[in-house]
Length: 171
Image: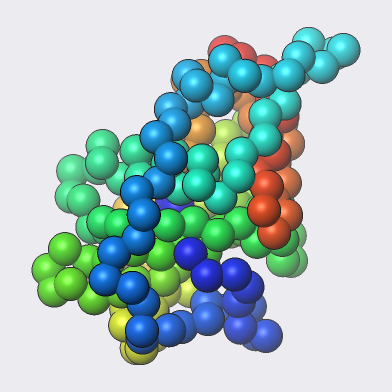
């Protein structure tokens, strides 16, 4: 899913057309790495916190497993959730062809012990994406899991301006 802070007052993405040619590579992190450093809670659940770079690494890793690799130079800014979402991300990157900047605001919800991303707003360059294209991107994002469903049964997820916190039980 998953590199500028904040969103527009209406909850949409802050669109910028002067995005850098490339972003630093996201921190290389796997779900196994995340679970290895999880803190065990008294009730047997585990909690792990990730920063922007680690979250970007998970999103970039998920995107590389996709049949089509729509984004490169992936960046993630964690945002406080809005509405009934448990968490929110601003995912940035560049399309491969043509090479233009992309921003997507993605809400995260815990549903049936899995993280379900929903694209709220997408812009390519300075242009907002039509609803039909946004729905196609949303379907693609839903196919990617930020946290592998077979490794962690997520009970709670929260985001702040700089941290993604997951609590759940290893499967």
